[in-house]
Image (cartoon, rainbow, N blue to C red; front, top):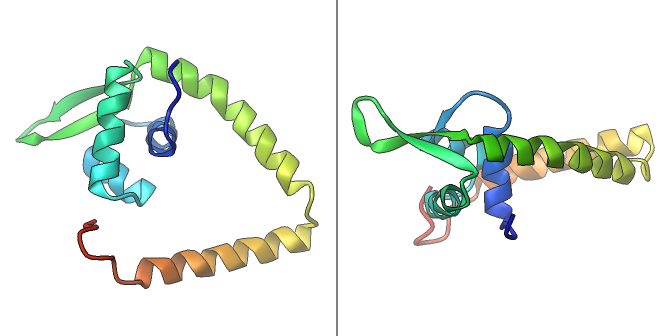
Length: 122
């Protein structure tokens, strides 16, 4: 598979979690802006890693799901990603991991409250 961008991997990861999602749901779950998700979806579709279907009742909206090829890639990558995560987490004690989780959660909440820069719509 040609090299993928971080936004593409994030979209694949969210779609790999289960049910088909609307583009809006992917935007919400990845917390990426609409343009990044749209570009990632177009590239993933071009690589035959996802399927796009119109949502009933809204011709502009789409339902996204992994293609067979996308599912195979997801199943191949997830164990590697989990192993890497475990290896990195192994450098910290249980207390340090809990503290890191608390810190990252607080930063995430604060970032969500910050005003968006002009021209960077949701």
